[in-house]
Length: 201
Image (cartoon, rainbow, N blue to C red; front, side, top):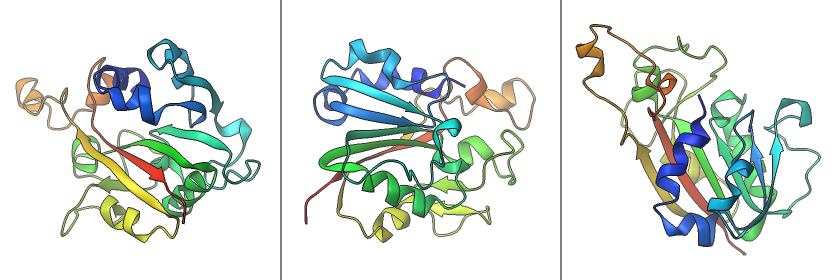
């Protein structure tokens, strides 16, 4: 819930978001009711941020958006809902201008799904994600390092981070519940964030 809102705390502490990543005219793919544009005062170089959700079209294909259009592309907890995240990622990079940044957050499979898939916390999740593992318990696991390595589009990886600063690893034992969706709490993040820069060939 409100994952973009939760993420603002770490974004405003890192000057790269306000001076490099979230700059110019952008789009928030899968924005729902928690669009990045409501936090424009924290990103003074952001001119605009278009909200994009299901009524606007297929987030995987972004068919109505031309190539090299936006200065930045932002997406929080949308990639896991798409049928083919590899195609989604390529299209999200496609609509990004060279020199622009893609800022994307996805759930970490161990912190969010917690060993069970299909997801018991969100039935629309079609894939799970890990930064890198030799082997995953999930038969729908996507290794982020491999996915980014396999894209045919020209990118630089600027950042990959496990967002677990507010994840309470001992909470399940304290409340005597074996599995608990911490993203339902006001502060809990159970995610991976990566930032890409589109480069010119």
